[in-house]
Each structure stands twice: as C-alpha cells, then as structure tokens.
Amino acid sequence: MMSAGRRGATRPVVLLRPVPGDSAVHRLWAGTKLLVVFGISVLLTFYPGWAPIGAVALLVFAAARIARIPRGALPSVPHWLWVLLLIGGATAAMAGGDPAGLGGLLNFLRITALSIVLLGLGAMVSWTTNVAEIAPAVAALGKPLRLLRIPVDDWAVALALALRAFPMLIEEFRVLYAARRLRPRPRARTRRERRRRWAREAIDLITAAITVTLRRADEMGDAITARGGIGQISASPARPGFADLMALALVAAVCGGALVLELAALSTTR
Image 1 (tube, helix red, strand yellow):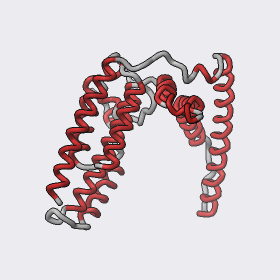
Image 2 (cartoon, rainbow, N blue to C red; image 1 turned 120 degrees about the vertical axis):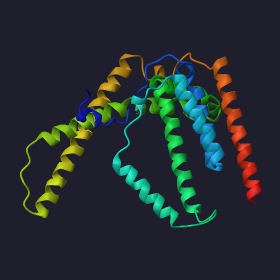
Image 3 (spheres, rainbow, N blue to C red; image 1 turned 30 degrees about the horizontal axis):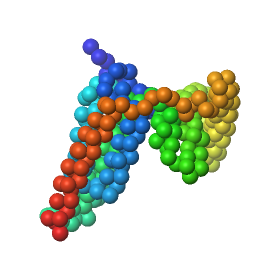
C-alpha cells in the first residue's frame, strides 16, 4: 500500500530534459517544432479567441498522446495556485460585462486557458527535443539573415549554452539552498536580528551562486575548447524531411480552420 507521504509527494517542474522515447514527434526536426511554436504564438497573439485556443489545445493533446508522454512528467499544481485562481476568478466576475454579466469571468477563463495552452506547447517541445538540437535548428532557420550580416551562429551558440547551463545551475542552486538550511542558525530574538540574519543569508547565497556559476562557466569553456570550439555547437546535418512537411501542413490546416471560425464569430458579434 502506498504511504501517505508518497501520495502527498509533489512532482517538481522538469525543464529542458526530454522524455525518453521514440515516436513521430520525437523524430521531428527541432526547427519544425520551433516553427510550429512561432506560428501558433503569432496566431494566439492576434486572435486569442476560444476557437484558436481550443485548436491549439487539441494539437498539444494529440502530440502528447503520439509521443506517449506519461502523466508523471506533469508537475504538481501547488495549492496556493488554486487559491489564486479562485480569487482571480471571483474578482473578474465582479467586473460584469456581456453576456449576462459574465464577461469578466469569461475573459479571465480565456486568459487562463491561453496561458495553460502556451505552457503545454512549450513543455511539449522540451519533452520531445534534445537540447543539443536547438542551436543547429536556430542556425539553419536564421540562415537567410546572414545576408544582412546578422551573427546568427553566435546567437545560436549563446542560446545553446544557456539551454545547457540552465538545468545544471538550477540543481546547483538547490544544493546550495539545502546546504544552507542544514546549517545551525542562532535564534533571533527581535525583528531587527531576523532582518539582519535574512540579509546575511541572502548575501551568502548570492555569493555562493556567483562562485558556482563562474566555476561551471570555466569548466564548460574548457570542454568546448577541447571539442573543437563553438563552431561545433551550431553545426548539425539534421534537416527537415517529409514527416516535417506533413506536420507543418497539419498544424497550418488546423490553425487556419480555427482562424476562420474565430473570424466568423467576430463578424457575427459585430
């Protein structure tokens, strides 16, 4: 029988770590996924209606099923977030508006659904794409910009290093915070002493974090130099194939249909 401690255990947010598997979504070129994210972001920026949101949610759900993303990959929602959503929904409902005085609540629900869909879209890219494939894809997509003498390769390398260092630094900061909490602390008797203690702890943590970051950056620089320089980071023979074209066509068809429905709904309301 599962203990109460394991039932109540929270699942942390896992970023930039692909879920193991071999599916059609995993095998897509990283540039294809970036193009899909860019196109959907543009669509939802100009037309954040229920039809586009529902279409994108359907695409994310279908991609998760095809990629066989387990439920354990989803992070646990903290209780305080539900409380904030309830408070926000109640506050928005007080604003009133059409239809039937529920305009404010409907707008709040639409914005919440839009945020969830965008987070799910980003999570799907993170769960099905290797971090090492992002920089070459950005370099390939930005190839036309080289005619304007824009340093696309340098941008791709900077993006790759940031994506690789981000999970590593998060783990380092967690270790530092846990080690700091294990240290014995004198009991503060006044508020002034507590404020001074918090200030000292914050300074110590920031100093340790900067030291760890510099040490990791030095180690990463040595590793890059040993492997042939930064040119190897943005170089990859991977290119889009027939499956990528089919995926782009499918996403374009679904988003185009949703856009037509949204424009039809807007014309009827006017």
